[in-house]
Length: 227
Image 1: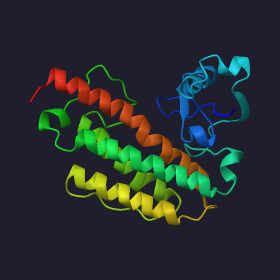
Image 2: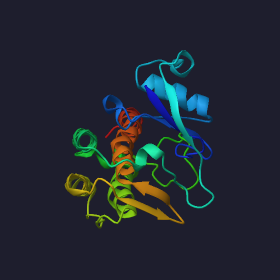
Image 3: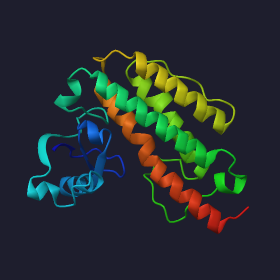
Image 4: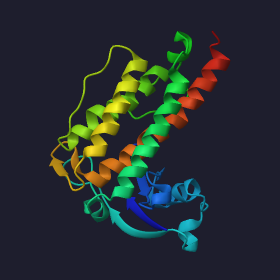
């Protein structure tokens, strides 16, 4: 399997590396770690290949990129290829499944659960999404008010309550993605470079990654803040 390494992606933590695969079976899967080797090991585990996949050749690095001098995002050459119908379809399927799970966790959750935060969880300094409710809202913010507008695609305002926001944001993103041109590109001084393929893989990754956190926080809240 080919791996694509962003050596200073800084997503989970400042300066961390990220390793991606564009393999459809593992579309939107990203490994992260303090350096490229750790990110590749994480990717290998997430793809079921094991932490030593890069060393054994099961994962082969096809491309490496680094953060540009301006902007906080870059793209792989592979991102510049027009998005395929299959990549669009698998992204939509992932989004629908992930949103159903997010809503399952949040819908009907008591205020004590939505307000729960793990005091031992470390986030980057800029992150504000600490509580269960904030993590869920962050998911909608990223998809509807970050990823899409970066390609000039329509954003949307927040709804008045969390469940409605998740429902409407999910529907909005799936509708836009289903109609999105396959070869969009955009670059800004602040947010770097983006393409149709990059937005698809990031959409396929982001909510699923946050769901790992969300499910854990909800479980902890049920134990530590019952009722």
